[in-house]
Length: 502
Image (cartoon, rainbow, N blue to C red; front, side):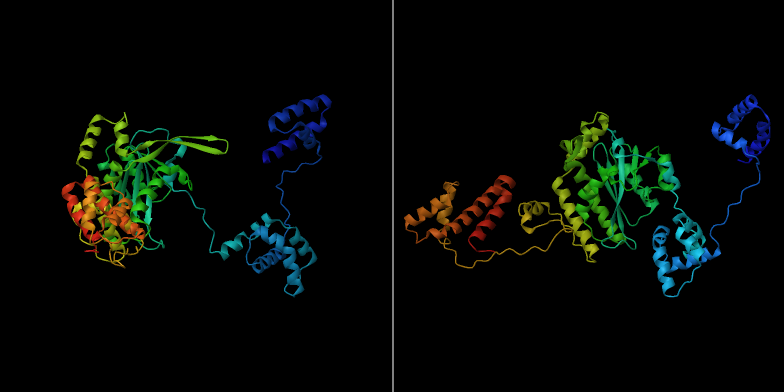
């Protein structure tokens, strides 16, 4: 602008001295040099006097206005400038009415005409002193600027090895102090999930956990997609990924749908197994680590899950199509980009796994985690898998089997309130059932009434139906467990029927 002003002073004298054609030539050159609009250039060059000195803005609001503004701001409880501008007329009138202010007419007019932006400028230094100095703007993490953003729509159909990673807190109802964290990694292509227990949230522990997971994965680790947590956005994880040629990406802030795969596993695996209680210390970390050792095999080899195939919008509705349910192990076998050696190794591992033994180990580890969280001594582990299998048929009667979700079950009634009317003739009824297992209780009661074994009323049909149902349930065990294992269960049921044992 200074150069333009000097140029205007020099050319204006020539422009005013020239005739019509000379002015036209000078005007064309002047417009080309300055970029002014032609009409604006004519008005500028017609001015009689041009000065180069810097214009000094006139100070509108004097010290009295600034002083009164501070008093009004404090009286308004330091509210923002936009709210203060709306309050000024009412506040000034009230303070003058009670004798707190006696404003000059000019000062009052200036205060009523002041804008919110000017209030901010006038109170900038005052607010800085009042609130303990200038507030620094929060800058983005340096590593966060280097990591590329990947949304849910950017995945497509990746090959196995690109995993989403997240932290699950086991802090209970208060996120204070030191508590255990679960690091969850989920493969986008196959839903293969790994969980690692961390005693605290620390970036070096995250790197060590990633190294441990990478060593036991059935496929090479190609990429990690994290959220914007500082536990991931740091030099430790960034340097490790750069050294191992692992692609590190992050989701958008406050957009959990960008990490939909791992977020789903946080609830379906971690919260389902561990719950929402508080875990602290190395003992709880070790117990949780033992739980995850069995869980990774049980989930990845024996737990099918749905995977979204297609999502399309039809008007206001969204139609979703899912692939058939499959385990991560089965998805790896179906992938053409997985080497045959990896598939063979997985098949050999699958043949050695016992799902019931893994489930029993998970239940025992869950009990240990709950006991440690409640400052109790964990019960010793039992190796009797057969007893665990026998209890699977009746476990539902005790309610929730997961100790983290269990409510105190009500005890079932096992005692009799009256004498069993069929206790004396039960051997005869057993003979009828052995001869005809499909014999109905109603037909048996009619045969009893006509046989002369005693007096039986029609109202006793319900009692006889219970007995027959229990007998059939005990015989059905032979079809599930075999005759050797079911014999003891059958004797127990018959003894229960006869009322000999509770």
